[in-house]
View 1: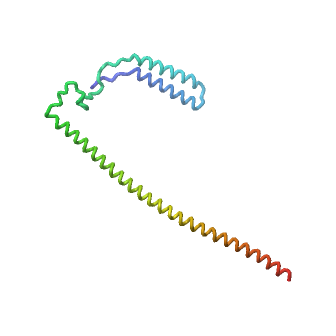
View 2: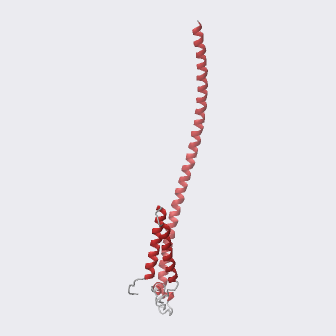
Length: 169
């Protein structure tokens, strides 16, 4: 897997075309001149690169050794002998154990969320009760204020009559 690094011209021109298009977008957004021309150049570069990449043939070399990660992909399956089988089961057991731990953690989190939701529901119910009590008290207070307002208005009328009576003497 130790391959020499090579300069990939196709990737280079992909990047150049994308850069030109991004700069053209900035020109458009800012309302600068020649934005359309820059867009055209970027699109043409991208179109040419896409056209050329259609003829790019792969070398057939594998980039990764997936057989090391997934032994089932190995064509001859020589590594799966009876001596290695418990190792594979052990790996599966470890995976199942991790899954079980994750499920347990998830279950605990769901239980905590459920408890928090129940507490929140109780708090909202208490707020509703308190709101009803405050609303009822406010309504009673409003009735008393209206009654007081009526009595004060009547008292003011009586005082006007009393002042008229005193002025006439």
